[in-house]
Length: 302
Image (cartoon, rainbow, N blue to C red; front, side):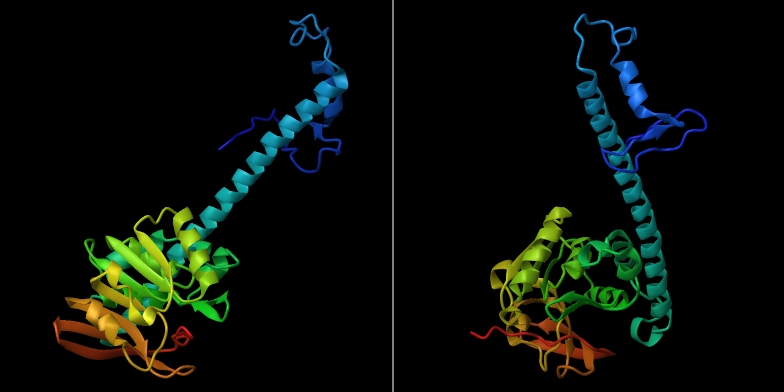
């Protein structure tokens, strides 16, 4: 980060445009530029060649304004980062409070600390259109366009916790959306494969994850009902859209001992957040955990 040292009693003077007459401690900068361009000034009299005063002044103004604009941008970014850190920490505390009120679902131990750490480290505001910290870290779902949403932070944490993701796991996510859930899982797993049926969202999520250096995430555009056999088999599968039944291809691609977490139920109403455990190659157990409301599972028209 750049810094500018000003004499006592002076204030920053980086507001305005190139055409403004900026002042420094009450004196016109034009006078300063004329002084530094004067050959009689020993600071610039080392060369016997006189540069045009106007051209030198304009150049110095441009350079100073460039430096000061960089300082202003850096200060603004630092302030926003500090706000986001506070909002993110508050979000995690809200999630903890929800977990304490859902003992019947989570037990006395509450949510996994690994999951909570991933939630606190992941910049949710970079996965929502507004990129506003106060909006992004509120514990509610948010629209991301094209009729889709980014889930409430507590639900993201709950689904990730129920999937029991371990550091050596390969995880499939169906319904990439903005890429936020994939980013959370990526901090916990060895590899994440995520499928999104809406091409614009798939492209935007892939770019966001790539720009943020989530190198262990692969994004694919397509119908997630059939899973991603080439990327599996999977230790865990997380589905972020509601369907009336669990797709059989996903069960086939789930490893024995693995878990699938998804909302099961009709569209546009409440569904059951469901955990399916594969206990043998041809045997699963299923339990409903909580009532939720997700967008419908979209299928390809083909």
